[in-house]
Length: 224
Image (cartoon, rainbow, N blue to C red; front, side, top):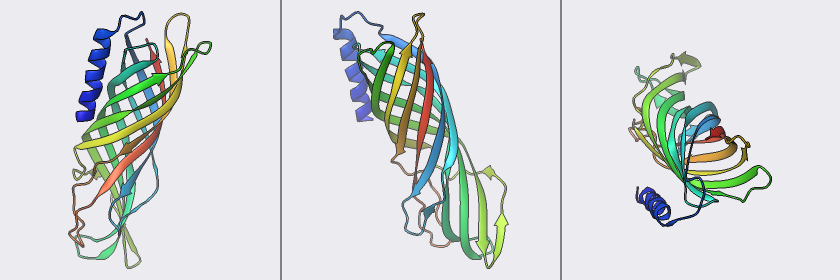
């Protein structure tokens, strides 16, 4: 939170002190396919493959020079991940669980975006900052295997996912501005989660589950 306050202070200070003639506010919409994964922080847990995801959102850019801005807005995220771990079921059978997580959340990003000077109608940019996500829905689908028997459960509500997620965002991309005014943007970003996503404990060991959620996304946006 202190880092986000620093970004906001920088934005306000730069906006007040700058007299340059440039477009100070830019708004737009984005859509982004994703590849997401979960990384466990327990020895007996392992990742069990990547998961396709998607996001859409609203972009707000506050420019304080021709080449720098603070980018924020909101993103609606649909992603999740897969984990595999030993545990016991309700009948005390010892076996291995393969669990697929489906997570929906709203993310508030706050990043510093640095652009090159125009090369024709193109500008290239780098972006770095932080994201805060708030979960509003989570589901899970299980496959439990024990003694050569496999039990599958259908996707159902799963509340053992943390409400809050913090992440580091790093991205690169390009912008193309039409003479009529709109700017089209395409970028690749990694959104690296660093807070624990799970709140449940393993039924066999009673140890708290720990895992982070990260994803790579290809963002397509239009800015006005």
